[in-house]
Length: 107
Image (cartoon, rainbow, N blue to C red; front, side, top):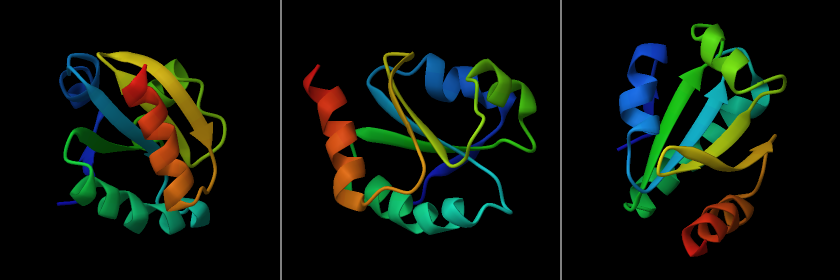
């Protein structure tokens, strides 16, 4: 199973109303670094069953990109019980990404 692509209409249900941790990848199809991160995030979605992984295309969902002040992509926001608790931008290793998620799990 890979990270689920969602749009503005689905965001509330898939992210804001979810209990637990949701990892959101704000990306664009033309973005090279986004393409680098995508397969790794799909792997993590397989390995970390207790985290929901979703993707938001910023070109198709500009209003969400504005709400979350996305100015660089890929941009990653980690939500816990509907609130942003961590965020980072750019390519990270799988280990660093797991570390970011695990920090949120401990809080």
